[in-house]
Image (cartoon, rainbow, N blue to C red; front, top):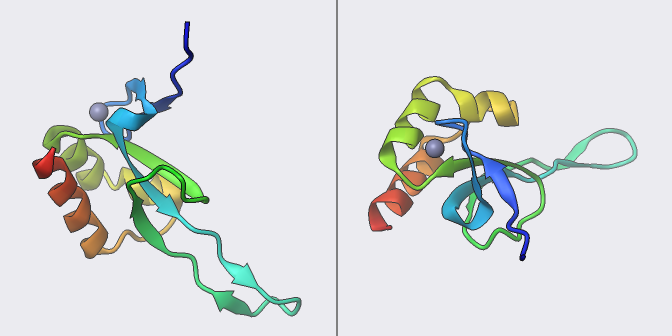
Length: 97
Ligand SMILES: [Zn+2]
């Protein structure tokens, strides 16, 4: 039997196959040896599942998305603010599917 990687949906909390979920990723911040920020961490949608960084997942349905968004679960899970553009992008992705 082939093993399917499972991830937890930020909305409903269920474990789902990774490729059925939308992934939001926070790329790592880069600093120089003095601790100055060279590259700020960024929040973006990961449609390929290949971006490295800390990720949060949500089912491709508006219900899970709204639930997670209203409860600020993405923020909590990635410990930073999620830009509105990213939320819009996610919503667009859900509507397309
Ligand atoms: Zn869900």
